[in-house]
Image 1 (spheres, rainbow, N blue to C red):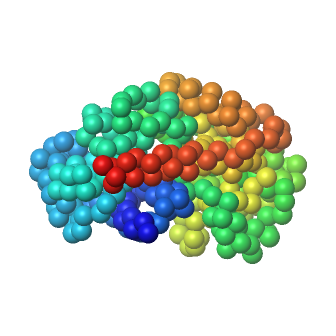
Image 2: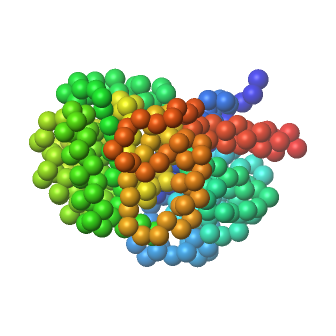
Image 3: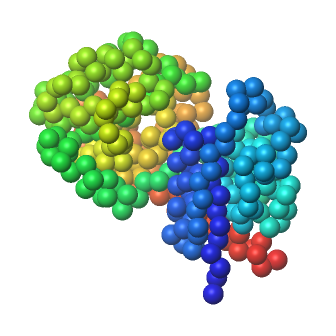
Length: 327
């Protein structure tokens, strides 16, 4: 009988970062018995700002990161997870299999496995690439969350469109012109009798969130979720994905784009200012695989099989772990 695999999920606690590592761990648990332990890496501002290799020199044992037990598997995502992964590998050697999600910006050979988006262009013997990034979206999660928010969803009758707004990043800018274009698109949907489930994100500028609240917070047919506004209760993000008939996503977010495509529903992009750069490769892959196109007012699209890269990578990870166990 195969023993339970203990998996430590490392992140700085930000939802978009943690969900990538946690999503992979949860997909792994579907194909192999796994105990998942979530661990948030906490540090002061000065340590937080140091490059990962400097962090590792300063804190090189797991206990420095409040990790008291060595897991068989450690999955980390985000820059703050790199030094703890290095410390775990130093302490556990072959007994701890380390996985880093994203491009670590250091030699991938520091980890047993690196899982990076195809559009990053990272290469290496121990690098696995995927369209976008791992996520927690499954049919079960979407159904459970839609049921959890059934009373609120009843106030936004079908057809429903989820609109997911990101913000300024290294490559994209949510300019005021782009914001006005997004707002016009939302208003046009509402005028057609379509309910809109609108979610802003951590990176959405304050002025944009305030403008959405001004125009849509008390408007019928619009359910606005602004995580920075108090008194809203639980985050309905997965319920939005589960209840939507189609999904609109700003171009800046790898996570939200791939999570939307994991639903199997029509997905459209909303424009952002800036240079797409390497994101152009992601847009091309999602257009080819999931028929994702810029939103032009039409909410119908060619059908596709839901994108499930997370499960595909989890199955590869199981194979690699089993090879280590058998050697």
